[in-house]
Length: 94
Image: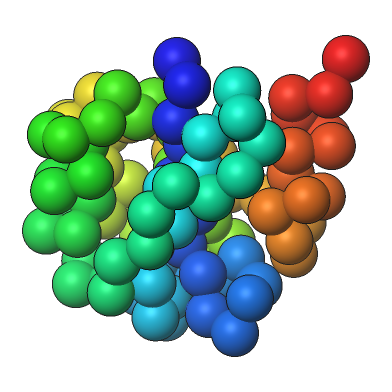
């Protein structure tokens, strides 16, 4: 459970459809590991296959897209937080 995903646009967490990139973040090392252009579910499937990802943080997502993402084994977390640092502080700092 080392990797989580973020949908991003302009260094801010964005909605699933409006994201320009998907960022793979290593929570154990507290750093971004990889970033790929957002192509929708295909972008996520690529990262899920290559890494052990378990959460996707996004600002908004349709119920259809959420279902597709969760079929890959990744739980979707809709957040109002704007930055990766805010999410790490809120969800992963003890």
